[in-house]
Image (cartoon, rainbow, N blue to C red):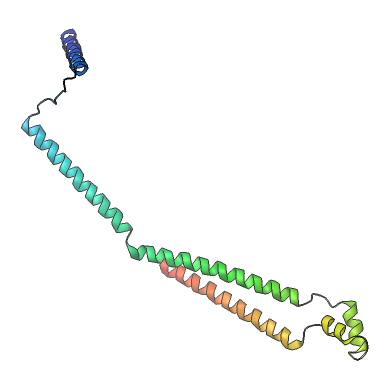
Length: 162
């Protein structure tokens, strides 16, 4: 049986190749009506499953989910901006407040502002105590803000987990 079927298949292939070479268009073999209806039903079910899959994808991409992730993203940006602003302020404050009193300042204080050049005395003398108090208050306020922001973020994270 096998050699005959192989011979028939080979002959059919040769015949199709000859038709293709001569330019005759091949037409599909006729199918039974039951096969056609089955193909249509499988195609319809594939379309339905594809539609369901697309609806699922659209459902996961609805706006409320996006808004929440956008809020978290913007909060991260706000936190980073706040951190950079606070660091910048600290650098400015730290650079304006001397770390150690210089010997020149000590000498000028001993001599008093009346002796020597008053301009040098003004330029070298330490910032007034009012400025120092304001700086301390600003730094304390920024630390309080930072801590309250961190607490709010922790509470929000706990609320989303619960």
